[in-house]
Length: 107
Image (cartoon, rainbow, N blue to C red; front, side, top):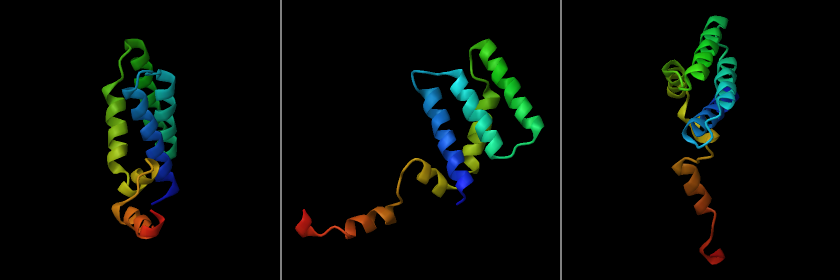
C-alpha cells in the first residue's frame, strides 16, 4: 500500500462526495479529476482529454460519462487497503484487537 494510493483514494472520496452531494461544484470536480490524473502520472494526452471533457461538462451542465468512467476505473484499480485507510475504516482484525485490549473491569 503506497502513500500515493491513499492520496488517490482520498481524492476519489472527495470526488464522489461532491457529485452525490447538494453542492455539485464543477470547480471542485475539476480539481479532483486533475489532481488524480497528476497523482497517477497520466500522459499529457490523457490529461488534455480529461480537461476537454470537463470543459464540455461545464457547457452542457452535465458531467461527462468519460469523466465518470475514468474515476470509476481509477477506483477499481486501487488496492482495497488504501481505500479503507482513506475512508478511515479499520479491517475486522484490527478492530477486534482494539476490543481485546479493553478489560471488562473498565466497562
